[in-house]
Length: 109
Length: 116
Image 1 (cartoon, chains in turn purple, orange):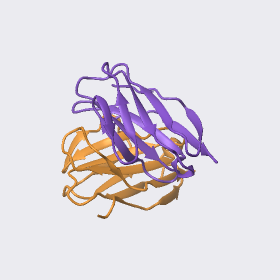
Image 2 (tube, helix red, strand yellow):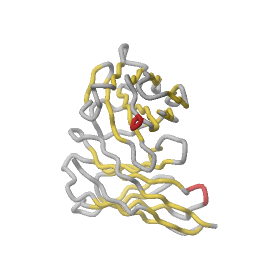
Image 3 (cartoon, helix red, strand yellow):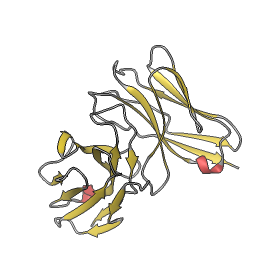
Image 4 (cartoon, one colour):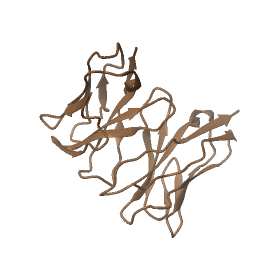
């Protein structure tokens, strides 16, 4: 299993850029890295997915170095509504789907 | 596009009773997942279906949990008999991509189960 390790919690202020790093030392060749966001009393919501280098969409960027043993989710100019738990997931065509404990991001005014 | 529907949203039962949860995935999504999320933890996959076949049920406690997806659309997860440690949120998700990834999963709101 491609186990992931993330910080338990992070604090930030509105308008700042937030970077959450995920470690996945035993990631497999076929594994993709996917990030989800979860608000209280809701199911997780897909944010972004990548395999290597950099991926950017309208809400976030994902940076994956060449060795793929870690990845960084970057949220530009966070707002109070970005307060949530963020999960990093490494999985692929033959791997069990495993969510870690996630990172609780708290955005302060 | 309608999202993943789940019912009920909340359920309180006594230990040793039975309970069933229902999930209707997004139309056209071949893959359906059931997760258990205990408070303070990430979701744990219980079972994954592709159409009406089981892809992965390695973490499903089969002595008390069962799930079916008879027509390849909606699905039911059952617990019989329930234990105190089954108290959790049960999440259903679906994805368009068949097989086991890469994929984007769409989650329902979940069913919060309390076993007393």
